[in-house]
Length: 174
Image (cartoon, rainbow, N blue to C red):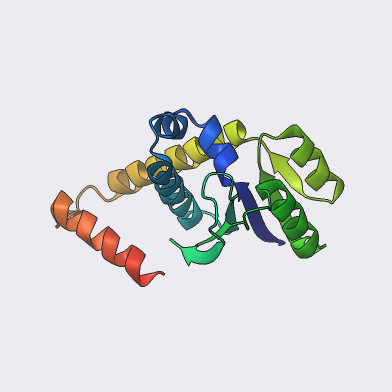
């Protein structure tokens, strides 16, 4: 099986997902970025894909960063570099016959460019639907598991304790 790699145009997704676009319109771009990373982290737990999220310097001038966060690779491009050009370079660099590369963006020109280099492309809206599908699949699996094991008490922790345990798990997985 091919190694799965996803490259996501972060600001494009933020602009196309209603929850995140609303935060952006309320001048809460940092909150929208953090929420996107949380959603992608959750998605990453249930897929085998390595995920790189690219934010261009258009909204954060003067910052060039690259760091791993939430088990994702997060990249802020250089001030004069667009996310599109960074994604194109990265797609050319990592794509080969052993890798299934998927680029998430709704930018038509970007989609055709990465497609011409052998990558799959998916729009931000379609990716949002994929996230919802995976969430529903996990929810259904959980219900089925609980139903099969209903004679056992499955949750011995309170909701607050469960949130604390999830946070500890996330910290350990960094």
